[in-house]
Amino acid sequence: MKLIVLATFVCLAAAAPQILQDPVAITRDERVDNGDGTFSYVFAAENGIAAQASGVQGSQGQSNIEGFYSYPLSDGSGVIEVRYVADENGFRAESPFLPTPHPTPAHVIELLRIADEQRAAGITFE
Image (cartoon, rainbow, N blue to C red; front, side, top):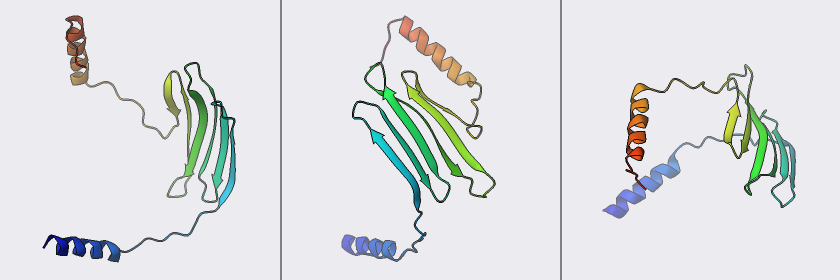
């Protein structure tokens, strides 16, 4: 019985409509990797998707990266571009299309206060 049910699902999955899209041509693809944590790349496709980044050695053995990526809005009204930095201070992205932070909710502030009290009392969870 289980085999029949499994075979039915396999047949249904195989018969599902497939969305075929035309291939997108890559118009630019340049990459440099120096093997020491420094690198750069530039990528662009004919559909408007693009990315560029470069990396340098960081102070803690990581690659610090600075770059951007962009893609067209689905309605054709413009392009979304996100610029970013990833380094010892974490990942930071900037774009007018990214949501802005909201004030920390009161319940989260209360939970942080409780956690601080527990740490001060020597209560830790590891």
